[in-house]
Amino acid sequence: MSAPEGHPLCQTRAEIVRAAKLCAPGIESLGTLTFSGDPVDPNAVTAWREAVFLPLLAPAIREATIAAKHGCRELVRVDASLDMRLAGPLAKTSRTSGRSIAAALQAPNSEPVLKKFLAAVAGGESPGHAAVVFAARASVFHFPACIVAGALVLLEMRAAPIDASWAAVESCIASLPPADTSLRAA
Image (cartoon, rainbow, N blue to C red; front, side):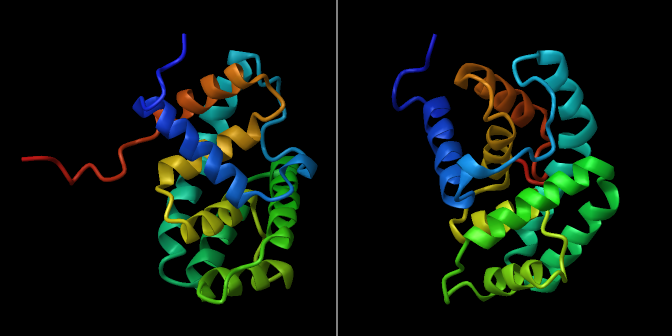
């Protein structure tokens, strides 16, 4: 059963798809990011979500979304931090995909932070992990971190039928901690 058009779930999905298209040019030529299991197998998705997405990628996306508003050095720091925490083949595929995304991007002149960061990735001064490059690009469009995270999960699961992809995206987004627990309505 699908949600009616205009429903918040449909609007969220539309924003996630929009973010994926705008922030990952050449999506059809991207290889594996960090998920290498069967995207239709809920156990494989859960294992990846718990071992990779929640402890490593989601914090990097949140930090990169904030860092992109401050400066290139901050983005390079987030990228280097993720590089130290990701291991072996995951780190390699993440860097390869991230560098591919970075090479396909052109930062507008009005976005000096993104322009410097893409140059740092191209020059080997920053690892260029997919999550960080993707979040840096998403900052240009002012996407919130949860939409960026959902779009990255959609990219990770793109080999699955769309229903399985959305199940994974929604599962991952629902597992994210609140953005700031100190802000509460009175």
